[in-house]
Length: 180
Image (cartoon, rainbow, N blue to C red; front, side):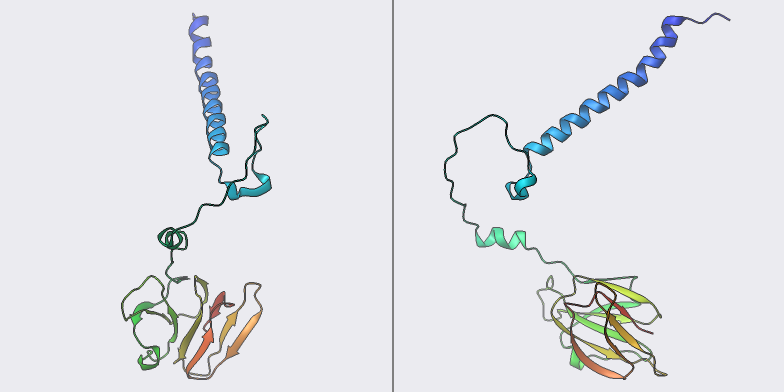
């Protein structure tokens, strides 16, 4: 069988050229990221090696609109998903289904009167919270003396109870809830 040596080398050269091209693209992207790194990166940001004259620079004022964009609100969430999620205007006047633990948290993304987000937790699980802030409330309508536990980021028990009915709580330190 005759093998053309120039064709065999050409087939091997293609992957080598591809690897070199990808490496070049990686270097270019890394260089661009270095150039566009924000000034807030601090001491870890690359420093120019060419000496330049430095002049004092005043910080640019941030407009109220820009500050609002920088501090964009995020809707509270839970994982795994709650059995039901709804919005209400008044947690105290809101019912919670039989056998359900309901947790109420303000949703900063909602601009209407119904700004309380309600998570109906029916299935026995440990639910992990995201973006739950400030004072909120709950309503435990589980039956049979089922315990509800609030946990901190480190897993420390913050509150554990089996009383039926409503209550209030500051959600700031709470990272998860177990409803059984």
